[in-house]
Image (cartoon, rainbow, N blue to C red; front, side):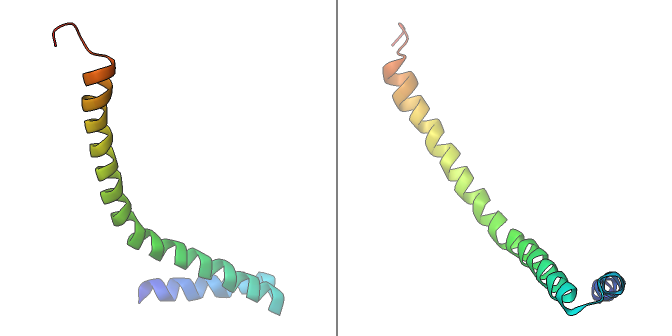
Length: 77
């Protein structure tokens, strides 16, 4: 609730300076995009964490099995 009041106060202060309908429309678009980015970050970030973990696990096993195990084989093996 407090965040909404701060948002409304900031919007009112910006509208005092902008004043016309085009400026208000541009402000609404900019604020809407900011809200969408923040909300999508909370939704997308956990999914990216699991994707990156599986990618790093796959790359680690690829490096161990293929690169160091076959291509860069040491004399001890």
